[in-house]
Image (cartoon, rainbow over all chains, first blue to last red; front, top):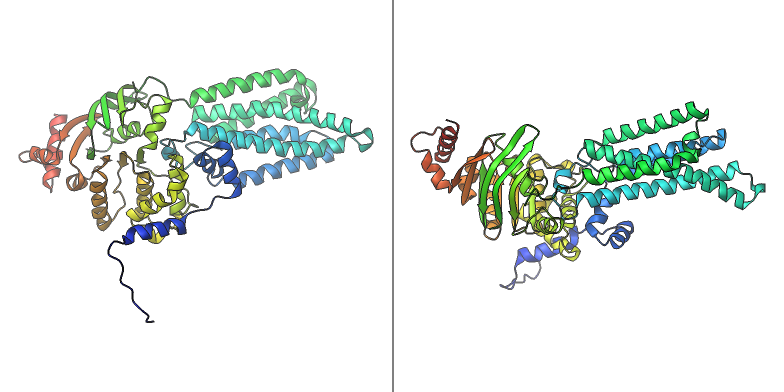
Length: 250
Length: 247
């Protein structure tokens, strides 16, 4: 192919031109979710870190939805609050796997970044908690609507939904905080998930032994204050475990 | 001084990895030599603010990284290539470098051009859109270098940067180091003495957590004229200083 040849002006820096072109060609356009998170968090880096929970984001979302949907189905079939019993364990495992040296391949590098690893941990944990809370709420609403007949009225159904929701939301807070505390102390997501799920199993089984009902762990209101106390204590432990001790650099 | 370290120590349980190091470094390429287990990586990790020292004084870029605000400021101006660079297999080269540019809090508008420049500087323009899982070890190392230099750091810390690079790439990398060292403090930890001879203006030799030599490559070479063993002059200096430190 032949055509007119143009001489390049001598003051054109070709490598600079190429870099500008490459920057436009290679640039990745963030999706709407990332743009929204960036605006909300006021940090494009934190938004990217939130949405690139490496290789875990989609499997975790699918797993949480499937488990809670299965729980709702089981609740409809058995009349037992299966969703309430499942939600704390599901969320705690997801929290433990949201961040850490065994989970994030580039964790060492992330620890040297201006967007602090503690902020990434906090934002990812909150996101996991929020998504699980929404999924749990949906599953609880379905279960409550089934348990309370439509003839009893919307107010009764709403009351039942609220009772069921609080039943698992408060234990979920405690078990998630426990998972986070163990995972950060042991620096192992496996340890955090295993400890939290084991602790939740012990609580459920203890409730069964003490009261004769499997659902006691999520229906006994006397447990709510201890759950909250555990949640606050474990959150404080997680904050302590992720600190960089002051004064050591001097 | 961009790096000002006084009596820095770091313990892991009973093991003292870094034992009272004093070090000052301004702009230029600074080589950190030493055998395996000498404490080079631990020293670099402290300088990268990944782990805190057990005791001692560490000032980076004129700041005390012990407090949150100054540490964040240092991290914005820092480039770090860890010894074991973890990577996300599903990311492309550009996505990986861009991710860390954002985590370094570079202004979002500047990121695409900075990423393109960094990727071109490590000669990966032809693989910019390739997934990391498809790259060779040497290419992954260059991706790591690209993320380290994307923010044009004033302090660049490279741990075994030439591991996995072929001879041609190593020559190109040394030229890049010399170029970067004109504006920034570049600290290169390595056990390959030829890298130090070719690229560094200053060198420190570590052994058993301590700095046992600090000077120019020429001064290190001079130490080996009588007692050292090795094929190259710098290697003879290296072995002579180590032998003297251990005797």
